[in-house]
Amino acid sequence: MQDIEIIKPGLFTTIQDKGRKGTAYFALPPGGAMDNVALEHANLLVHNADDYPAIECTLVPPTLLIHRDTYMSLTGADMHWTIDGVSVDRYTSLYVKKGAILAGKPSRDGARAYIGLGGMMKGKAYYGSQSTYSYAGIGGINGKPFTKGIFIDLEAKPNSLDIVKISTPQRYTDIKKITFHKGPEWAYITQAAKRKITTAPFKLSSASDRMGARLIDHKIESLPHEEMKSVPIFPGVIQLPRSGNPLVILQDGQTTGGYPRIGIISASELDKFNQLLPNTFFHLELEQ
Image (cartoon, rainbow, N blue to C red; front, side):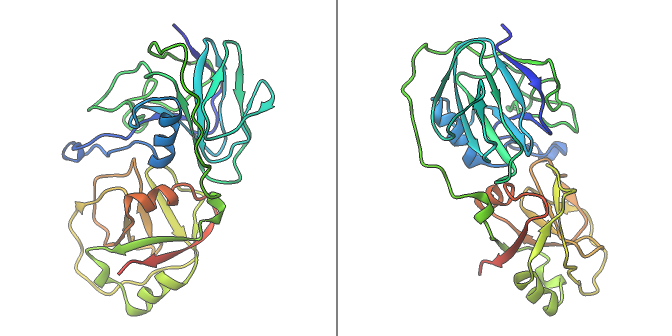
């Protein structure tokens, strides 16, 4: 069956679950949802396992035509969702009838929203995950972001589910600091740079994507050091390229790199970081 039709694709809409494990050996990043908490909530609200795939929306939401009665949930960024033109709440189970249209508006609070759908999406898993990794063309629907006219098919689901509602989290625009830990090459930067990195506000570059996020407006100076060989990196690692603008490796980022790893953002903090809007100012706070 063709259960969900994409009328408008949004800016960069993909199917994501919790990603792939143990694939760095094959130079394949873990991928997966940029905000795992929002993904888990989206699945909880439609009685799915917390690692089921959901629809991840980036900044500009898609418009969906529902071709069968189903349960749905909306979490993460507030994209001013409507069903048939009527505003609907986030963080609650929604029963959506056949023929309904889900639409939204560009987010001004948070970069990513999630649409949970009752029942597992029918899709091919690659290395144990349906997550879309567009750079390799795997996962999701044909390994690509949504395009107009494609369909999502769902596995069968019971006709009736208990309606669940949970508390809406803090506004993402209230996030003003992201904590991090010292990286293996923390000693490579100057004392002045260490003070700057924890006191000066950084801006999230609008050129950021699922591979990495550039931090701009303040350059971090490094001490003279031998050229590094390529070393393992993973989501949350803060690298220092020669430009002096720190680079945060994200879910679809490379698995090795030759720049100093001056910091590491934990998985829970990375969920918050990935909700920052482009051109947002924030502080980095060092965890001792």
